[in-house]
Length: 307
Image (tube, rainbow, N blue to C red):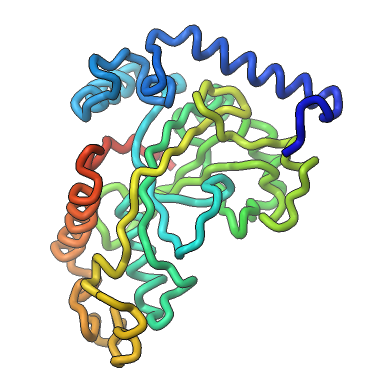
């Protein structure tokens, strides 16, 4: 990593300013301690971490306040292969959004699955978007417009000039209408460092010049809008009841066949347009998360995406 001591003077000052802003925001917050500082709501939790009831109460209070930027903590999900990489400069979704994507784009292309997707990752995400978002889009105060990313690059034309450089490194969202899965079907965009370049083309200078929105304690500053923590994973094999995927494929099985609207060797993804079955699939994912990570809330209230 580049030391601050060797960074060009303007960016060294910018980095120092960002650190100072974070320190001031942390010091001014009514809550204290690492669990609070990690990005939960502003109240001081009675026993270190907020209960689900406390989160729901705070979310309702925030929503009742109407306009203005709010700090929001909720779950985001991502369909991913076995590789591990940064969350920034990627698109995530609600559980319904990710399950819709898996059903339509992943399991229908089996053996191997599309992009070798093998698991659903869950993240505890705190978002505090810049005030410029509410000023630019007063009818959509909490999230900015969704930005698509591919290989770490924002694919929207003039992404930085027209969006991130203008309104800050905001978290965007998009509602997926007319989808088969019930509930809130949203996709999110989380801008990271150097969003105009692909992962392999990002230079240290570009990363330093535009560090993105990731930070420890989101404050609504242009470079401090979101924080993410891993909250577990569920594999597609667990969902489909597959012991060994290679053996499953070699046996001529398939997770989902569009023509038959059913799988062969597994029935988990059968009847794609059946809302009841889709609700059961969502419940199964949540149940697996609950079984594997009993100390974490099975679900968190999802803020409304108005885009």
